[in-house]
Image (tube, rainbow, N blue to C red; front, side, top):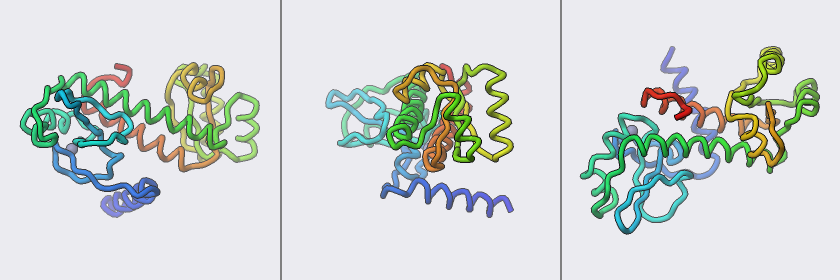
Amino acid sequence: MRTILNDQMNQKRKSVEGIRHAPERTCIGCRTPRQGRELLRLACTPQGEIFIDSFGRGTGRGAYVCFDAACIRQALHPSKLKAAFKQSVTVPSERSVYESAIRALRMRLGSYLSMAQKAGVAISGAVPLQRALAQRRIAYLVLAEDIAEARAQEYYTWCEQQDVPRLTLFSKADLGRLLGKSSRSAVGLTQMRFGEQLQMTAERLNLLCASIGSPESS
Ligand SMILES: [Zn+2]
């Protein structure tokens, strides 16, 4: 039963992530092939400095690794990096790669929100958002980490009543900034595809943070 459920989830995941033609890449840590955007992309300067390609869109040679502490640890073996980049490299510290990976995922989360805003599918501001919720137009809800407790409870109730999935992410100030607006406690998305991208990226961030054993706020 569990396998069937997982297969269905993987199917769903593939259909969501396969919208754009995405080639498979292999984690240099565990050797598992995955879709490129499911992996962290490492790049290398001509001087052999390894850096994180936050959006995975850089040109030139890249090495891919799962968003997982054990894979990152294995990938940072000098011989693996040297083989991947075909040059001698300066191996970065595990800690700096973990921190860059967390930053990269948070940047992706932010970019999905900005894209949703540009696409005209993000609704924020208490009055427009509550109106859209009342009209059942909201497919996914993002709540700020520092939202007032009473306000959060109101949104939890909306979500439960309408079966709307939600995510708690970013400060009110950051949510507003990403939308090009003043501080925002909550953002509703009228299209689920942005919500699905946010959800998957947030899951990766949680898995990474859990595998590192450190709070996400590091
Ligand atoms: Zn891996």
